[in-house]
Length: 130
Image 1 (cartoon, rainbow, N blue to C red):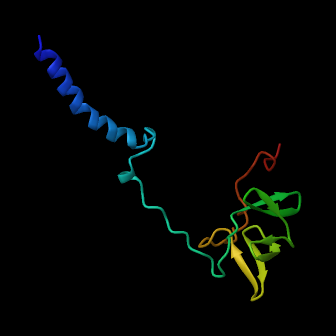
Image 2 (cartoon, rainbow, N blue to C red):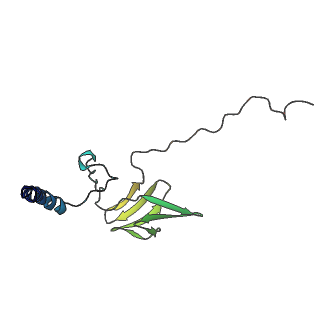
Image 3 (spheres, rainbow, N blue to C red):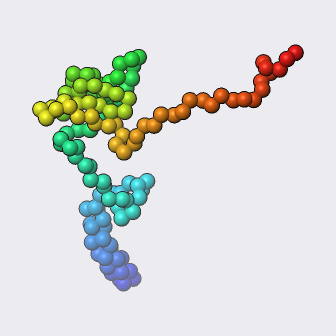
């Protein structure tokens, strides 16, 4: 029966280094994919003049406001080191020492006019004589 405590001691001695190494590593969130499966973080492209690009516009009645880090900014407020000159539906006009620049909310997206409704020539119940 002296061999049983010896085996138990050897087993515990073999497990202790493995337990110490796993305790030093932080636990991974099981709901997230492993780091090897995650895409590389995209490099943020700085603007031409080097500061923040607008992301969201809020329209209240006829007033447009730009949302930046949870704060509503209106015409005349500063966005970074540039002053807001005008807020359109799809762009913000910013002024700095170099002049006014139009900064689109959705770069690469262009708006096209949609043609008006085509008049239909089908007969409705209002057109049918009674």
